[in-house]
Length: 233
Ligand SMILES: Nc1nc2c(c(=O)[nH]1)N(C=O)[C@@H](CNc1ccc(C(=O)N[C@@H](CCC(=O)O)C(=O)O)cc1)CN2
Ligand SMILES: Nc1ncnc2c1ncn2[C@@H]1O[C@H](COP(=O)(O)OP(=O)(O)OP(=O)(O)O)[C@@H](O)[C@H]1O
Image (cartoon, rainbow, N blue to C red; front, side, top):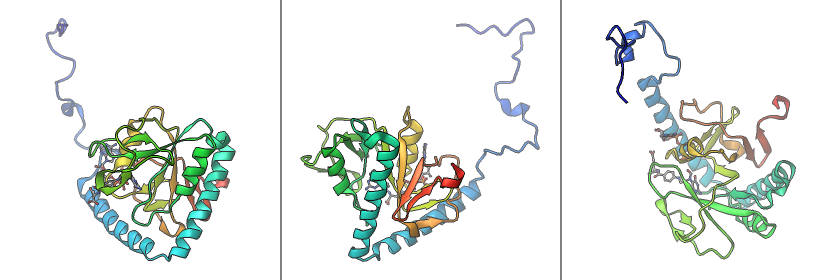
């Protein structure tokens, strides 16, 4: 299609709209690069601190935490999703001291839930999800995370677990710094109902949310539902 500039022979605006922005205009959504760098540096330090604290937990403590989390998750799926039968539920294969919810994955599978696991297929891109059953022979994925092999069915989760390094009371998460969950949530339509799973001790006053950070639908710790809080619902 050819462009008709109209009778005046001029475009309504110059090709670059910057010419129309008042020099003193303040864009509240713009990221200040200095501040973004400070937040990134702070997040790296917090991830290292939280990771060390998590690794220092005794095996006994980890077992207790994981059992409590499985209980809260079971309750949530029962009360909000009719136990998720026939729904696609993505979990995670625990690494680096993450709570081990694999017994619940097997239990849900046996109860008719379609269980999936996240896979980094392409670096710095959204995650994909592959079907998992107790018979699945895991392969080695990116970062050495065990994943269902390429032949496993690709699935779109209805409900998705997001393991947390840190979390805040506004529903934001701090992960390992790859930005994978944020990219995945930004790309998925419909967006899965996303459940953050973390330790109560990993609560931060704020994660200093940046424009790319997407809040979770709910956050569970061993102490129960932390977000949204009952009184605010
Ligand atoms: N158990 C489990 N599985 C999971 C996740 C998870 O958090 N837990 N993920 C949740 O997302 C995805 C994998 N996440 C990843 C996150 C970061 C890097 C990574 O390469 N990190 C770099 C630092 C990146 C940076 O700082 O820019 C590194 O540590 O060297 C790899 C995978 C999918 N599977
Ligand atoms: N939707 C997106 N599109 C492109 N890049 C993104 C998006 N979301 C996040 N990122 C990039 O990922 C980087 C890391 O993000 P962030 O610090 O939030 O990671 P994280 O949530 O802790 O990591 P992960 O989800 O992998 O556990 C950001 O600096 C950002 O550049």
